[in-house]
Image (tube, rainbow, N blue to C red; front, side, top):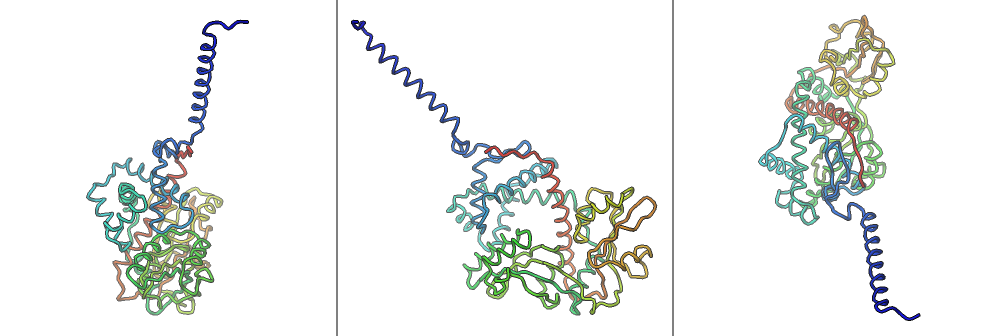
Length: 415
């Protein structure tokens, strides 16, 4: 059959159109299969309620944590911290709390001062690591507004009485009366450069939670001979420790970690594994520190559920943060002034144990032994103890409040 005029041209045109159509289809499929992070670093990666966390923010935070000394699980840590901070920002927004640029400047200066590095030098280190100044400023700003949220919500319920201070000072007294079981991480600080690096890394270690995590970190980083045993050291009398360590330990719950402590040619952090009074040194207490948590209409099973959330007396403030103020009472009273029904329960308790058996009418009363005191030590800084006790109490409220925010949040991973 003879070719039609222009037939070849038509075929070429058809083939060209077909190829273009196929190419367009392939490009569309490729676009659909491209990860959001590859499309744009500012694409949402996680949604927290109505707020987004972008891929860029995750990358920036991971780099910041690396600069601050984090060495493992950095991406997961960045994710967790940014989710918590979104919730903190939302809580501040609901209360109308903001921070000015000047306040952020001051907060950034305080932050770098704790690291032992001038602001400009620290910003330079961040820039070299690819961290933008806006990222660290947002980090600092969130810390400032969260602190104000806690002050607004809980300051009135975190007041420290003279009895609270007396109890802490009595345990820290020169005559002993208490001993501690500690784990340690000791970092060399033999020159200014090494000291700055040690302070930065030690600050990161203060966020460690759990005995095994602390032990593994000690094995990895500590310069002390105790590293072979995960940083664990034997029982020590509290009164043999330097005052700056004693004052921190007395405000920590079991498992808590101190702020970095400067030692000779070293920087250290300590984890409190246990604190106990020594019965032989305090045979006849003059006063007893105890708490009552009153639960009207509660069954024993409900009381047991509450007790399961409490390890120390300070934990009671977190449990009772949403209850009327008269539901939780903590007192230090001479033995002769303690109500007889409470005293009978206290007599059978060890430190930080709870009795669930006291019932007054329709109210079940949880009785907890917080400590026994024999003398009030003179010459120690009451103001320092008061501030640390108050901060610890607010921290207990803060942990519970943040746990509530996390439990109520709608968190969606978009990656």
